[in-house]
Length: 528
Image 1: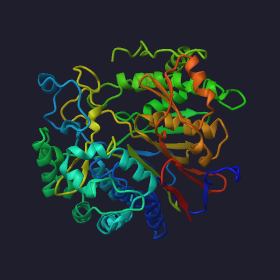
Image 2: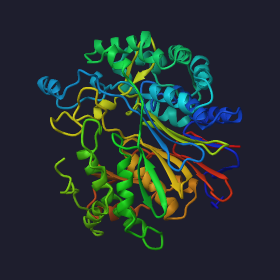
Image 3: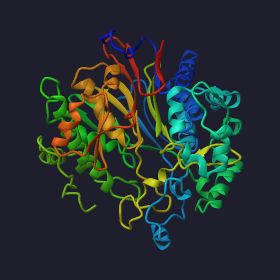
Image 4: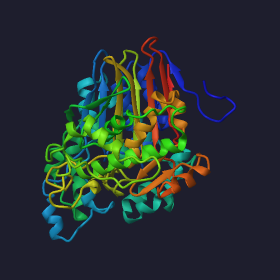
């Protein structure tokens, strides 16, 4: 039980169903759907559609989506890849010939075909119980009538408003009166409401063919993009086989590459060789250990993870005990070391939510436009921002993640699912771009190794070693920074909160649901 003299949130306990999202309106819409008899899939799509309206810098219908879904009684989750592909004309040779060595975040070339609507409509048709019109109704109403901007949304909106300035349509919609809406302001998106209504009536095809697709393609072509109507028409979400590992008796599932979920499993495999309990490992040693293993994982991710349809990703080798032993062999507890790719394989901004319904169906869903406000390019008539996931592509010929025709880029967004003895334990996820692999590991080890409850695990301070730096949240003891510097880390206090988690833990004996929601965001866990 938490210390009620300290600030913080309580874990939400529920008997029938629960939802956890990073926005109160999203959580409320999902709970309303559950109480009206909808299942977990219905509630999840309702929630994410709302969030695509009220959290525009984080997500939108112009983005991508990944899902892990465990129907009642299933012994393993279903994985759905709703990430979009590059245009058929996107060839790495073309970029090299143009002298382009990197895809800018606000370039039309950073826009892959949005996959979110393909994922939502496929998942709803296969596993939902309500119509598309039913699940989109709350989002349509909020876009049309307006919604109140919440504090964390307002903070991020103001911080990244400068990114929108290059696109006049984006300025008109997202900077009304020339400035970002503040907390407590009401914001409306009537063009988006009209687009959502078209999708509600016409389904998938209303987005990928016809006037909505024509609007997006025309804008991208105007800016120099290679996109065609045929690229949009060909978009589809695909069921894939999740990857998994066992960590201290729990089966942890992730979506396979082109996502980075494989990295979570690699890190857990390496960490299982250590005692991570508070009595065995002090805070400085834990952060150092996580940083050293994390650097190894991300180094392999950046060199090897890609679209498995067009590149060979050595999944089995990277999940092997040999790789875990290699990663541990690179750790010196006294000093930081540079990562290297294991010789055996050397040749080769986001919203998350989860729902468990009264029948035991559990869904873990993540939807993203990547960087804040994505590409900052808005479809002018349809009112939705296009993501910039294609900026993850490499423009290096022969690289596994090199851009290519109809190829999916490496993705950071990763839903997670925990099972034990063939039963669902917890849908979970952590927002935060590159941080997400580390975020999954910190969340799970806080619960499994350190004995925290769901909410405590989210409220604990976080660290992240990436791109040559070790970021520490300022809630750590001040002396910790100096200790990390002594060990050779380029350590610094993080300027922004790291990540945003949601989780619902199912007690297998009582069936009671324990739901937690990220305190660094505006959202909440709710249940009944």
